[in-house]
Amino acid sequence: MPRCRFIQPEVVRLFLVDVHRRAHQALIDTKEATPTPEALATAEAKIAEADADAHFIDIKKRITAGEQRLMFAGMMRDLTPGEKVVLDPKYVGRTKVSAYVIGWSLVDADGKAVPVSDSAIDNLDPETYAEIVESIDAHEAALDAAREAFRSKNPSGATGSKATSPSVAP
Image (tube, rainbow, N blue to C red; front, side, top):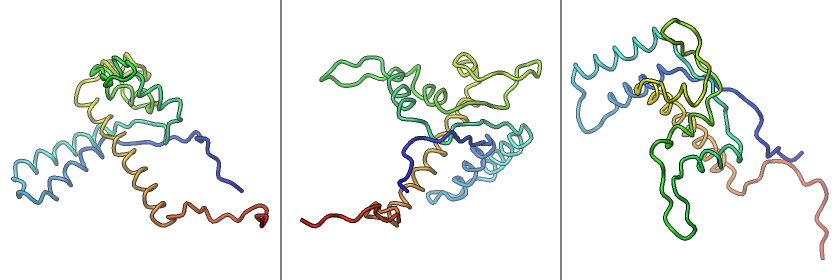
């Protein structure tokens, strides 16, 4: 049976604390210099704070071709044929968040759940926004790595399925 080439609706939950865990690990893995005790303590405090918050985002595992086109088009300020594309800095990153995020654990000052919307995304504090973008970027990188690992194991692109009918010899 041939593989389905349509995106299946799958949801992935990403915890924002993982952004700080990756940053902490990168700090430890730094080959240029040994991290200072202060830097390590700051990173560990951020992990503890984010872990206590327990905030998460629910995202689409993969976006569709149409969502991807809308995401890229939403970033462009000017698109004149034959000229260099000009990106609109107001929307770079936000279009990705809008395309992927379908839910989150974020609440307002009164503790009420805030629905995901472009307005809500624009009203996030910069640190939370950066955590969300970084979480989605890490998710995309993991998908790309898995896809590349699959391709390296299957260089011909073969899926392991047999032909449904034999080829006719000329």
